[in-house]
Each structure stands twice: as C-alpha cells, then as structure tokens.
Length: 68
Image (cartoon, rainbow, N blue to C red; front, side, top):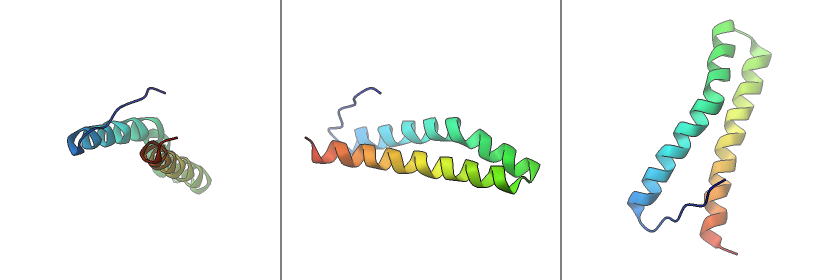
C-alpha cells in the first residue's frame, strides 16, 4: 500500500474519491452479480466484504490522523 500525504481538504477529497472507486471496483462486482442471481448467501457475503473494505479504509484514515 502506498503512503499518501494529505495536507488540505482538497487532497483528502481526492484521496477519498479514489479510494471509494478502488473499493467499488474490487467489491462491487461480486455484490452486483449476487443481486442479479438472487443468491441470498452470496449477497450477504459480498455485502460483508464491501462493508469490511469500507471499514478498513476508514481505519486507514484514522490511523494516519493519529500518527505514531
């Protein structure tokens, strides 16, 4: 994972948009396919993966804010 320095609100907005695009690209296809197939089990798994990816991204930002 690359390190990004965020020094302004614009930098943060750009990072958030790019990160959201990455998450949707990686996790969204499985969610869409499960919904299309009406597979409740696959839909639940895909939704959980999407939620985990979002949570991980939020923790990534939080960890960067508090520093080491």
